[in-house]
Amino acid sequence: ESKISTTSSGNNHLILGDSLGQIYIISRSWYVTTFRGYEISVDFSHQLRNSPLLVTIGQDEPGINPLIKVWDTSRIDKNGTPYCHRITRAMPGNKVVQVSALCVLDSLQLMAVGFVDGSLVIYRGDITRDRNSKQKVLRNSSSVITGLAFKSTATNIYLFVATDNSVNVYNITQKDKEQKVHLDNIGCTKKCSVLAESMQESHFMVGRNDAIYCYTSDGRGPCYAVEGEKVMLEWFRTYLIIISKTSRPASLTAMPNEIQNNVSQGDP
Image (cartoon, rainbow, N blue to C red):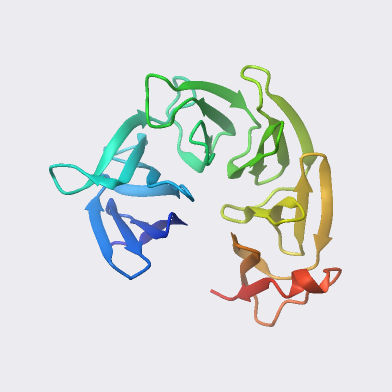
């Protein structure tokens, strides 16, 4: 029996991946395209917002052998499946380690993969071309990386990194001159961090049992008291979506009215 193992959205599509290696592309008109992306399982997916490119990580062989695949959902090959531009092993150096997080920059020039041992691999160059892509292994910490998010400004590119016991940000604008800044000694579980982008400002949001914590590249920002064990955080347009385990409605305190109106909470 298959189970949904990963979800993503962008370019007017909803992406689902399951534990048997199947990938489902759902259009706005609810037309579903299904194809086998991996022989064993699909573990991570990232659909670019304004591009038909879909990046996935999964398993084609037993054991820990994560493979990165870059698909073009607008092109169909002779087998009737989306064209696969690239297949690359996800490995921090020569070690075989389980992947724990994936993030891709919308410009298609940067990709980051986090691992359970705290390793972080940054891929520079066109993500569709293996030969032109250069990778660098950074040792973020000894804790599992639980979340990644790119943030671009007019002059800099930042990579936020959450683990189960820390929050860090890297300035990765210049190749081989990555600068790390430690933001907090408390982290979050998987799927409980998200980059919230609005017209005024952007925050890397981290959900913990007592509150939602916000960070910028300069340091820690505001904190919003939202009780309950967090399961997942998502950002949709101007809405922060919180899924938590709680038996009663969570209270929102110290949060401006316009933000309160854009917070959606649900229980699994």
